[in-house]
Length: 115
Image: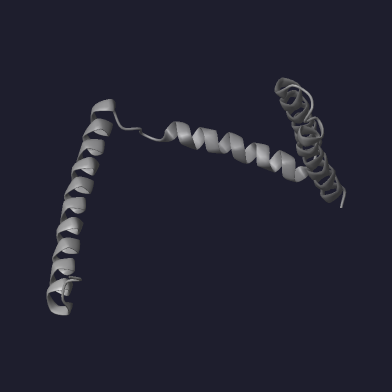
């Protein structure tokens, strides 16, 4: 029950941060953003001390570790893949244009032109 209350308080603080952004509409943008970010940090600290907050932080750490295990493509591989995708999209665009033109031509031939 304690964790639910902490999460609810953190969410309310977070909503207060967004509200503060709009309440301070007459202040400079840096002040508005600073207030909102400060309140968001406060909400994060409150949420951190709950069990779900700690589990979320652990999940984030594990996600970063998994992302480090990914074998990313080299620049050459990425450029080749991008080139193949562009060529495929171009060919599909031409194909769809030809199909569209053919169907339009056939329909206007059978139904008659608008003239």
